[in-house]
Image (cartoon, rainbow, N blue to C red):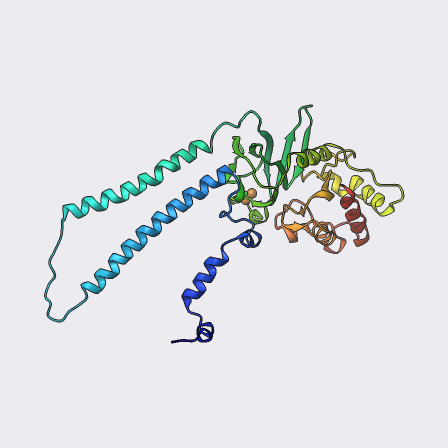
Length: 352
Ligand code: CUA
């Protein structure tokens, strides 16, 4: 008999396969693969998950059965010297009826819950749903929250929602096709220029969920990412109230922030961005009103910190090919010195 030590020294392919399967389990899986579809947290996501597992299970069953029979036949009817021609079985009616009926039955078993899921996930949003307009840009996301007083809270790349209340996304695009996909919230749905699509789901667990565009939309499609932040009801209202107020004024004593504000609001940034509470009112790029509070920069691809902000402001097209944001650093043909970019970063980070 082999000692355990011998077994440890000689991993077999099935050991590695078992390890890979185990690695796919548990909370660690979500941390390592934040865009997993195997940890559904809404009714919609569970519906897709069930359909996937049902089709996969039936597929594996059919695969094992067919391959098993095939292997058995290969062995049973292998070549024997002098065995002669085997018995011919062309046109066996019973067999043909069976292999027509069985797949039809399997497809029916998949079709019933599939059609049910299509209707369930296309339902009208409930009356108490939170409406968020989602606009696909090249290559970032705009999120608009219409307010009861007629105002609209506008943010980018980070969609905040409350738990336990249905979220109704109104999906639009003003350029090309995109597709909204936060895998743990449910399936993908397209954003199309000449029609409005709807997506309804109810977040159940607090947390930060990863998502990204799931429809090829140009050079930086793979860099069109987002975060979905699910709050408690109170946390969400706090967030919304903060987003609804104008940008903070720099303290007179903080000269770096004040210099940054002057550079941002009167310089090149003002051509494309809006910051509520300042004269900036352009809507080419994302709103920067509470930029300092966002987790990410550049369409969800990098953590929002000074180092990444400098990379982005200095040479955005290098970070995100095809970006409308031009290279602004003076050593790559732009008009801003490193010192000026330092002031701009200080101001942007102050926008809480
Ligand atoms: Cu937007 Cu792909």
